[in-house]
Length: 305
Image (cartoon, rainbow, N blue to C red; front, top):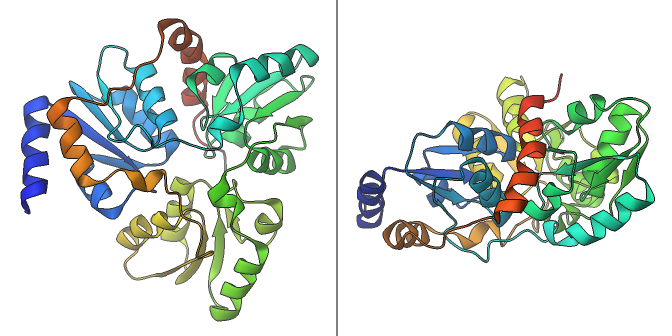
């Protein structure tokens, strides 16, 4: 065990802390974590922790969600500049204006959003359960899906529902292009194409399977195929290779990297545990209003096969 890892372990034990990390984090950070997962898995883990401190290795909206679900537990985000460009493409004020135009619409908000936006939503979802969440909306009600137009478009295809889309997107997944998939297929003709539903529709059209990161992991592990072209953030190849060491994985695009996810390092985890900063907090009124949509998301579970 190197010196830095030993320091983190000692601090974790002294603080009675748990470290949660998203699949897109650096390998060194994933190796430190008590739990590694997708947004739904980590949100669920945040409700199950028996710790005095949560260190959230992800981006800001994830740490906010953990803070809402654990109001009495300090939630540390090792780098507060770890934001989400898509979450910044919608504000609570803009959402309230849009709701006034369609007061009958059910607002389904992707978890990749600020706590304030969640507070003005009816229910939240993740890429793992977005289809199920929309299927459970009464058929006579239109849906306003925010903020990811690509995930919303995928859900509209799957459900056939009347869904109005907010014009937000993930810059990392938007950089994955159809020509990238076709080029990888020429290089690896026997590989299956597995992509995230945040990808543009033209990329999804070329996929053999579409799933959340957790769903992609399960799909590749269960598949008889021995090679996969992976259409999501490049850091996800690390947990795939750990779970399936006998299989080959190829990144769909050389530019599908999220710099915000990579801001957190092992050193910053150590510093956060040492100083108990930076701590993520959510104003009481926003936390109160956002908690119910988040809890409805957790109750919905994952999408049906």
